[in-house]
Length: 86
Image (cartoon, rainbow, N blue to C red; front, side, top):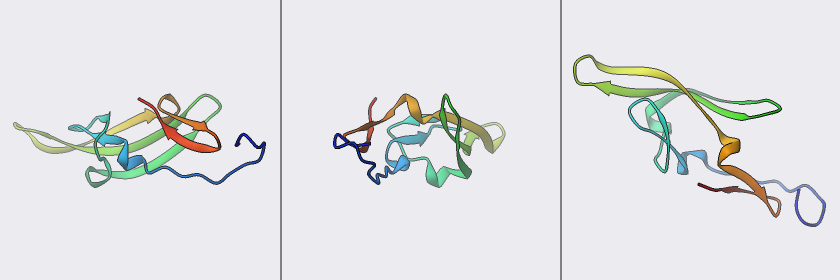
């Protein structure tokens, strides 16, 4: 909702803010190319970005790890638009 009291359409590219570091979600990297089964799950208390993230161990090779990060901890609404905050 904007300062004018009406709802506004807004979008944010999560790939610009969240990343994959060897199978773990991190901030400030891209995750999409190293992920699969990406989904968003909303509840009363959180908005989770979930995915299987690709990682690598020198001794066993590539693997996939299920990960999740709460978008509500870094994304807020300001003046009717989504804003990313560290």
